[in-house]
Image (cartoon, rainbow, N blue to C red; front, side):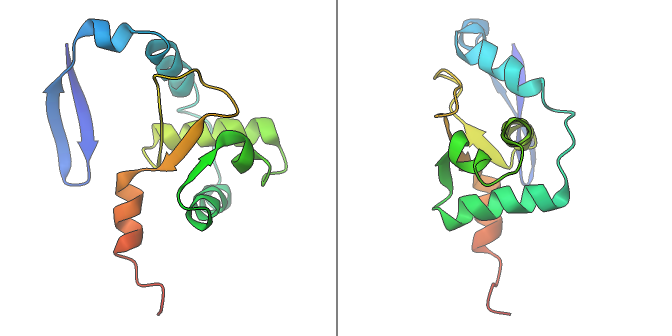
Length: 119
C-alpha cells in the first residue's frame, strides 16, 4: 500500500505495509484523530495552543493544553485537528488519553527557527 507524507517542499511517496498501518492502537488512534479533521479551530485558538506549546518547550500532554482553554472537550478536539493539519504530532502507537504527549511538528519548529522575533 502506498502512502503520501507531506513535506514543506512537496509530497514524497513511500511504501508502508498494510500490517503496520492496521496495528493497534495505531489504526484506531489514526481513525479517531481523522474524525476531527473537519472541526473548526479559530485562528486565535490555534495561536493560543501553539504559543502554549512553544512556551513549554514544544511538548505537552493534551490535558495541560486543555487546561488553558475554556472548554476542555473542545480543546481536545482542537488539538486533534491540529494533528490532522500537521501542526502537531502525537504517538499513534500508544493509547490516546489526556496524558498523551503532543509535540510541535518539524514543519512548525522549522518555521519558528526562521522567524525573527526581535523585529
